[in-house]
Amino acid sequence: MTCAPLERLKVFFPSSVLVKIVFLGTGGSWPSPQRNVLSIALKREKEIILFDCGEGTQRQFMISPLSFMQTKKILISHFHGDHFLGLPGMIQSMTLNDRQDELELYGPEGTTKLVKVLLDLGYFNPGFPVIVNDLEPGSVLDFEAYRIAAYQAKHNVPCLGYCFEEKDRPGRFDLEKAKELGIPEGPLYRKLQSGEDVRVGDKVFTPDMVLGPPRKGRKIVYTGDTLPSPETVRIAQNCDVLIHDATADSSVEEKANRYGHSTAKQAARIAKECNAGVLFLVHISPRYEDATPLLEEAREEFENSIVAEDFMEYEVRFKS
Image (cartoon, rainbow, N blue to C red; front, side):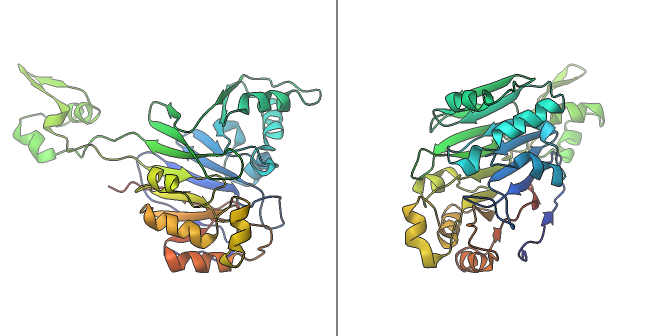
């Protein structure tokens, strides 16, 4: 897979449940003509989960194919401005567009206090409920179809990375087995596939009689700002997508590491160690008008590396 600098990427795979990543902002530190600061949208069906919310994120939404009004959850990695200063503008824009649904905000310790300060700025009150929760490394948010686990990134301030993982899907339906058992074709098959027992005459058939072993859902890991970390390798094992800090190239590795960031090559080594499906490099320093050097050095370590660009789209497929 190749991607020329500043080109949009659209890669689509058929799946029964849409999971698409849209990179709204891919730069670090401050906005540049090439990139806005960090914000990554994960769209699953009609829900959008936002990882970080740098300044101007609501405008990035307007340029993208997504709507900020569909955002249900925002997860902040840490309190450097390029990761959270978009929150007041985002929430105000939602209010001005008559949002009624509640918004869930999560982040490291201190998030509740920070958001209260941000929402008290100026003559403004949100027109909808904003539910804020502090997380700690090891926290797991358990929702109906997926979980989001927080883990400790290795930055120079407290920082959380996040692992989004869908719950297991039912195994494949064995049509021949169902016929052998004498189960009539039609609605009963659908019930078994959805996990229900069915009755035919005086016989009861259970899903395990016609379904194979459960299949893994999709797994996406976002590191926030981080040095190379064994914890990322552990959390991201066999992930479909790894979105990793890659602030600079190796010529300035010492400086990048000193400020709690990784180089593209270091990020690629992590992707290789954790057996990631694809690596997206983000938090690109404004020094790089052309990020080709980062892409080239990453691919020396991990071929399936991509430098994320603003408004790039990637639809995540099931492995099986």
